[in-house]
Image (cartoon, rainbow, N blue to C red; front, side, top):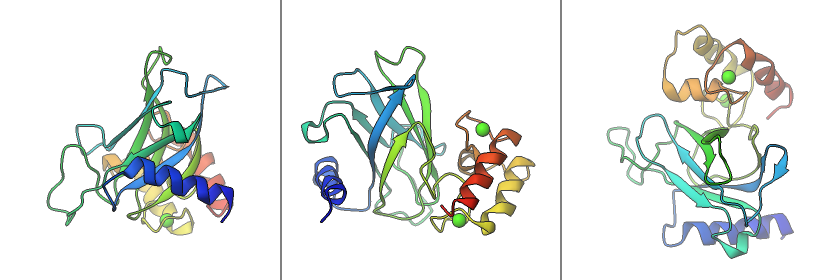
Length: 195
Ligand SMILES: [Ca+2]
Ligand SMILES: [Ca+2]
């Protein structure tokens, strides 16, 4: 087992606790104003989906000793999701989690650091944030990749034909909070990267 996988397993166990499944775990390192965020910084990572009012996950830097200077945020999914009901603090597969940072060391927060399309249950993804987590932002047909099949739905969002909040968030490649022509280049880059 590689160190990377071992690290992910430890973090997943620590973050998910008694909840076995179907949560999503995103872990990795974080920068603020070009400087690495550490366990000693007053920085909280939290996630929301546009369709629910409350946090769907939160992690205070330094609160998990085994994580060290890494963050590890668990995104809670609706355990009985059949598309008809959603708790105020859980996401449904297919929605786009927006990951933010705030706290005493983030004076201009909250700052959007990633848009994460939840394409399946039990995802574990490593990320360097702020940034694009490959296969998440730009994925519209929810098959966990960004390819030619995603172009038409991406264009529909930019044209305003599709005004679904989660699709708008998934099209916001440059983390400005809106979807517009400035997101096109990064979307094309994601396709070319085969993400
Ligand atoms: Ca896709
Ligand atoms: Ca944007």
